[in-house]
Image (cartoon, rainbow, N blue to C red):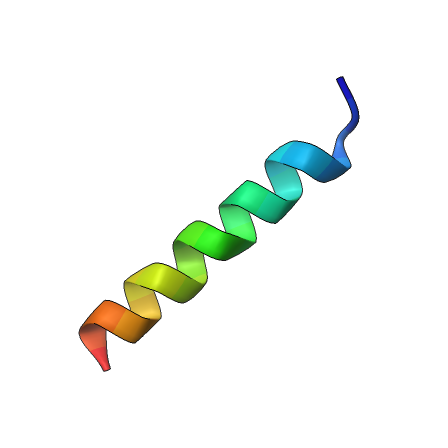
Length: 22
């Protein structure tokens, strides 16, 4: 399990949250 996988998912979640908010 690479630390990049969860990191990418986290970023995607943050972007999705911002997109939904904005």
